[in-house]
Amino acid sequence: MIALDAFTGQTAVVTGGTRGIGRATTLALLERGARVHATWTGNEAAARALSDEAARFEGRLALHRFDVSDEAAVERFWGDLESAPDGVQILVNNAGIRRDQIVGTLKRDDWDAVLDVNLTGSFLMAKQAVRAMLPRKYGRIVFVTSPSAHHGFAGQANYAASKAGQIGLMRSLAREVGKRKITVNCLSPGFVETELLADLPEEARAEHRKMVPIGRFATPEEIAHAALFLCTREASYVHGTVLEVHGGL
Image 1: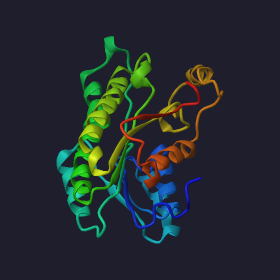
Image 2: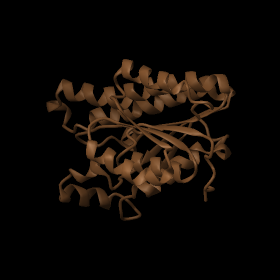
Image 3: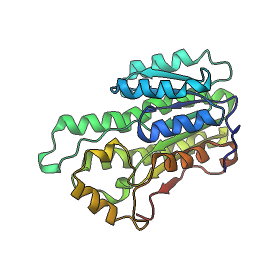
């Protein structure tokens, strides 16, 4: 069990932090004392709902609307955070999109969009996070990847490539910053009850469910708990690895 005050005095950034796994992670960090900057792009209703729910945390949540693949927007965001008195200790790179299609008919625009958000966005956010964390010699960076990075799934070549790229990025970055007490890891959830699955036909959902030995999809809260573990001070020797939370997939 992660203590309710585990992140008191710390500041976290969660990309894609208003829906699904990101929303659950944002709320879990708030519940354990953190200040959280959650980013979002397109779903204003979800952002508003999260803001309403987080009112009980007395101003410790800030919402920021921008595209993580927009380098100028990312730099402005981190520039605004420079005034944070104790810096930023945590980055959870969760923002991601899917545009599924088999390779033979996959449009270049859909390839580029998925790689831009999932991989380039992770790079841009991690780059600025490292710059903020290095002077203080402490930090926790988590990339939310996917089993598709290893297995591949038909119709998800762009998504699988972006998620495999996150793992390569994580491992290189881990070698660069480990001696500065900044840990860098990937969290690899399996099938999770989020909007990314909601648009699948029920037949496809049933087939995916059969693949999971536990026999069900994860809840966002179950994945958020694993993300929080990687962000704790106690996880100081968990570095350069992929934590798989997929029900035995």
